[in-house]
Length: 314
Ligand code: RIB
Image (cartoon, rainbow, N blue to C red; front, side, top):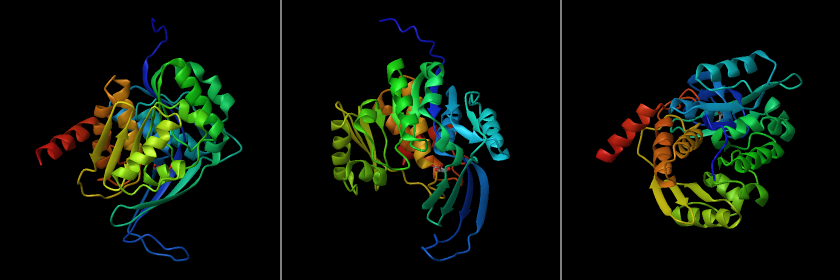
């Protein structure tokens, strides 16, 4: 069958945008305590916006659909997307809710804790997504996360799949998902904690990651890449591959999942196979962890290729 769609975008990201306020210190505070940190960074974030920027930095043609407030922070986030080469003209502004905010804390090992106030992100409706069906139909890959209301995510996945795009879901923040949504997803990429919420399987090694992946495939996902301590397990009807985590000096794990999802989407949009895409994404995620800040630390293609070469040579 001849594809008559006008496919001029590699990736369309439908997701959340936040302003991130990040503090890095020696240790994360325990509940009920206060600790001093050392570094502060204010910058653009949100999983959707991060993944859009991540894909653009890897050389893809990218568009973003989401919702920010009519406040100055919302304006700044959309301008930042434009400056990164992301087409954001379809993004919406909400007068009755503030732009999303995330408070990010990072310790000396790079481990992070995040709490968000979703604000305008939670005002994007399924109808508003449906009105962007022409934009979605221009994509080779539709890239989704869970920072929007579930009906908006479901509408995006349905429209993406119906238009012939590859639908990739980063199921973060974690929540249970209906099988109707999983059936529209070609590749799902949960980390260990998200996989446990989705499947009830406690993921602590490659074997348990495989069990979680099998559960997701049984319930309709086309393929799963499940994060586990020490690596990622790729599972599809054709393949099973363990991708060990690369050894790097970890500064900040925030946004590593975004770097992974973005790189995966870019490779799939280029027509590369899932195994190659997952390998490249694994390197992109490791590269991200060497820098501070979710969006600020997302790598460019040359950096990912350089790390891939040096880790092969080791
Ligand atoms: O994945 C990292 C992102 O999660 C941060 O940028 C923060 O905004 C939250 O959405």
